[in-house]
Length: 337
Ligand code: HPA
Ligand code: ZN
Image (tube, rainbow, N blue to C red; front, side, top):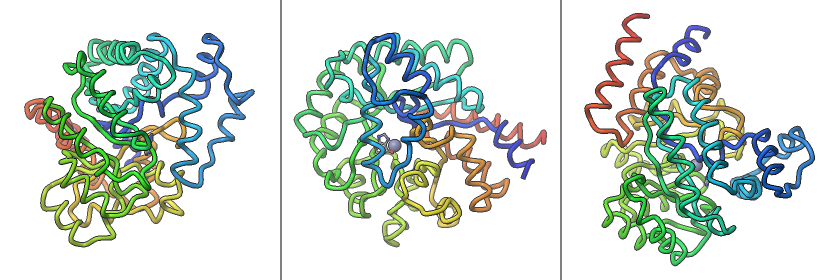
């Protein structure tokens, strides 16, 4: 198993499912609360960590939205993003496609411009310093209205050069993809790609809606698609990329035990799956930790781990030449081992 860990530590990989606001570590949360004089309902870092016990997605989201209240200035968004990028770089992540939740900030009076300027400044610095490339995905909060999503898309228009795709996150049950069909069509008209969280807690019907109504280019989570054989065959046939987040699924009780996580089964079914950290500060591990714990729990072998790393690039929105360059790096590493 040590060998597998060494392979995971060194393999070039892309992270395709990461909420920037979910990478806010408690230490940084306290620092920002202090400098911005924002009240948070915790006295110590230990108290924050102790609060991170969730029975479902909503229990997590309730704390996630409280935590992000400390983010106020452009520097805060830079610091948040930079802290994540340092962790990703340490995990030999070479490319990231990160989510941000503008409505979690504009709803508190923080300007869209403040958010995106801070984030993109950090992304540019990581590319300049380490060659770590990135794409930005604007997520609509699905518990809010279609009208609010349209307003957010309008606010994004001056920044389209810096936004690759739109996504859909927050409370899934009761907020099916169909609610956002029109806003996703408008985003497509603007040249944006589309991804959506579906089948994390929601039923297979939500995955069908994401495919047929939102016309997604990539599926976030997708676990519950496994309940529908015809859907699995369709997703395998289309080569749809799944951004799976094992430690997230464990913390949010989508699986009772990591040993029962479906990742290995998904690979065996011919699904194009990737491993990601989702909200690493809340769920107990960045991307390599997700690989390592899942490898032990479900019995991934070397070929599985290499396939997952390859999928992370072929499932990314990078141009083909960049994908080929990263795949060649993986091949070189494997041959040298
Ligand atoms: N699911 C849905 N919405 C989210 C998540 C998640 O895991 N993380 C942040 N917003
Ligand atoms: Zn997510």
